[in-house]
Length: 540
Ligand code: ADP
Ligand code: MG
Image (cartoon, rainbow, N blue to C red; front, side, top):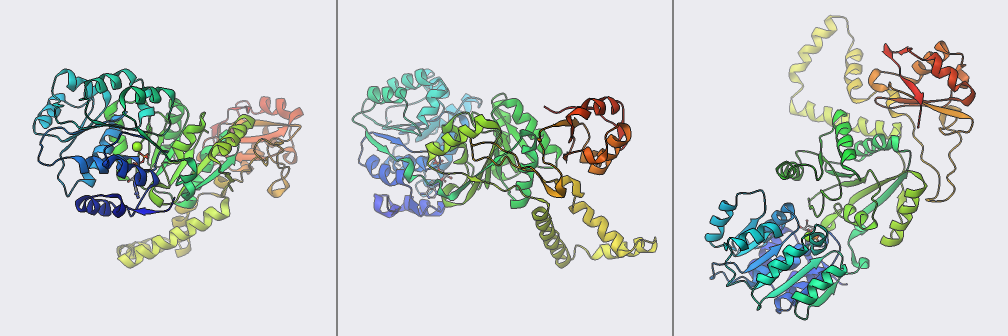
């Protein structure tokens, strides 16, 4: 579909100006088709994927249809969640700023009295969740006499959330002479049923996948053991210097776990899942929106429909169970023509198969990612330090510190000593960036593992070797030599028989020949590495 400016769609000057202020230059396909159709007065059944601009597709004509001289309610929008209601109300306010339309959002968890007073002051457009709208209907606080348009946004999600009855109750209350618009990313049967019952000859406007604007999203996958997901994710964050990221997990407990680990590594991260109270969720969302937190870790349900501008990257920490979720998740980045990156971690044959079915479904082939190694990360850190020092120097921030240097040199430290100590803060010890390998399979093909890595050491997962887990890591300042030393010292194993050693933050893995494993486990009982008593067991 060719690009279309908003000027060709029959929109008034005031709204065009607001659209321009919003930075929208061309209409998205769903907007180009829906806006004129809605302005003509018909019912619409609009289907397009998440992130394709459905909100403006209905708010623009809705604003156009509101008569500023009538102070009462004229347009009502139903949304599945409070977050979405606020988002739609925000979009409506933004696009009607030269028209002065009174927009009110109504949802549970906020004082109903406050909402009633606002309604009495003459809201012309109400955006709400089905539950709260019904509340108002029951209290007769909604004057429906001027209502001419009702919109169901994210209809599939509302049905998924069990709002079907509420939706029908609300629609049964609406004046017969009205325009009914329904927007959804998918069209399950339940939606068709509502359409049949409540819409009049609706025009189906369907934007197919081919017209999706996901081409701006770079989709990358890593085929790895699940124990290295966190390490790889943090390396990618550092390498690309992402500012705003969404991390998806399949379970609430995983959300908590990943959030905690990110926090312990010094990232500003918060979790979002269905067990949290609405108030807490809103606070977290707003902090993320403002960039006060950089990483939002969420389940699919909690992040449903959330739209935050400027998300640089989406991490599928767990590959989603459902192919549709994949599309929804990655649609949160690369929005509005900006580029974004979507990283998916897969572990095991089953997930490799699932990834292939995602590829078939989205008709996009994911690229296999390269795990950032030490050299790349050091280059990034190098650049950062140069920029930092350059900035600090030119801003004069360093001036008062030159005096301090004299004090230290008087104590016998050389300038090199001081500089090295400063660099230590920016360049973690070498062992923290151990080389990690991926499974070299083509998704689902034979999963052969790389045989040899650097230093000629065998790679992890070799036949005849047993992988052991140790509860010490870089946090305890453990280096490979310490592990070799302890094993060789405490047990009968020879240093050269020890296989791959992988050291992470809080734990490590070491490979030993299968025949020696029992001896090592026994010998290491109660042994210490770097002063810490080691717990060692066979890795799962
Ligand atoms: P959907 O409801 O289809 O998931 P949204 O309405 O939330 O999508 O829009 C997704 C993003 O695209 C929002 O950030 C919105 O501001 C932006 N957007 C909408 N229309 C346009 C446009 N014509 N040009 C540029 N950005 C747009
Ligand atoms: Mg939407």
